[in-house]
Figure 1 (cartoon, rainbow, N blue to C red):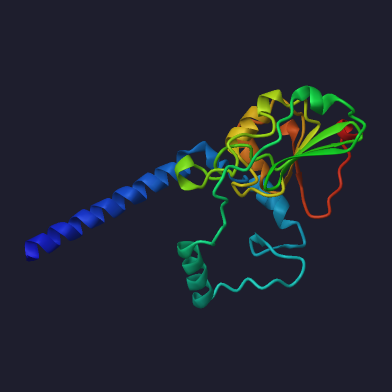
Figure 2: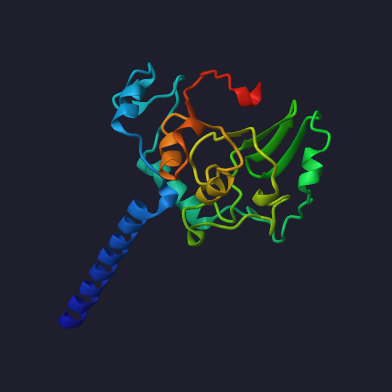
Length: 225
């Protein structure tokens, strides 16, 4: 019995170590995780009034309470799941084509791709917001649930030239590696929060296309004039 327990314990430890190695390799070498800001960027961040002790802080008092009780309740909710959180049918999609998009460009129109992904057409400009246009909002298809619809209103390849792509933040349901790779030749300007530009540089986006912006920053770009 003692020998069996030892062998079982050794097997479990081996599995845990192997999983830890796999996770470490995946996190460090998978391109979906993007890049990290360099020393020059970090020094620039430190000059901001709301960057203190190495991190950005909220401009208004915000509770960041993550007590043991709160953490346990969040874990419990995650395990139990949310009732009816996902429809039991594929959400129907109204398909459009590239000709529909380029017609009547002076009209203000919105194409919704789900969650926070929108194509906004305004004043003759095409502006794409948080284009997570992949099937799964995660660094790997096995790690997340698929979108509620089987298809998009229009595929990336059919989209016209995009005047600007705006990224609100770098959660996987807002910033998708595969989508950015497909879009990088369709636009000359990505507008992203401070620090997020490192992901784009790691993905081979030219630095002149990347515009990092802090809270309340304003920028005038020839694409949008």
